[in-house]
Image 1 (cartoon, rainbow, N blue to C red):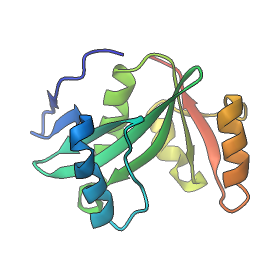
Image 2 (image 1 turned 60 degrees about the vertical axis):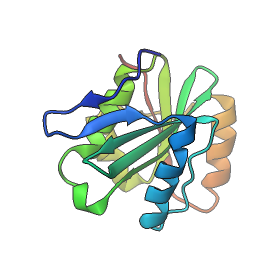
Image 3 (image 1 turned 45 degrees about the horizontal axis):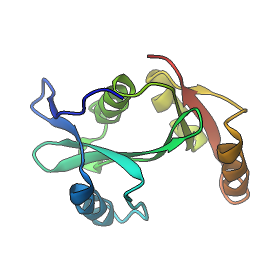
Image 4 (image 1 turned 90 degrees about the vertical axis):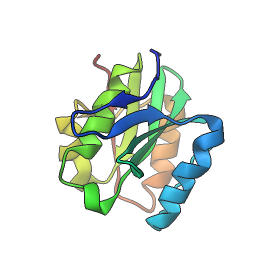
Length: 146
């Protein structure tokens, strides 16, 4: 992993990784948008602020890389490339594969950011995906480029 200092974007928004002490900020953002997501200490949490948090992404280290456990963009910031910018920034700061599970309708968003469908995630993620697929339509995707 590379240095994780805040990075100002051309639009004035700032991308940064939250410290453990700042995780409640991400959880407040999730609650504001009535999502069941929760940032925890075993994850890396990346956000875009403008000046408040407008997007949050959580990563958990897994065998062979990372698992993107959540990505949320404030509805008022959607359609402006916010999710793509956060995905690309995180990709630049991580070696190894980044896996995710998403609803099929989100595949174009992730494909545009370098992710591709993959039916063979690492075994721990594969087991989890099969459990999730019992109640949801999800696909596995991976981005292993740098």
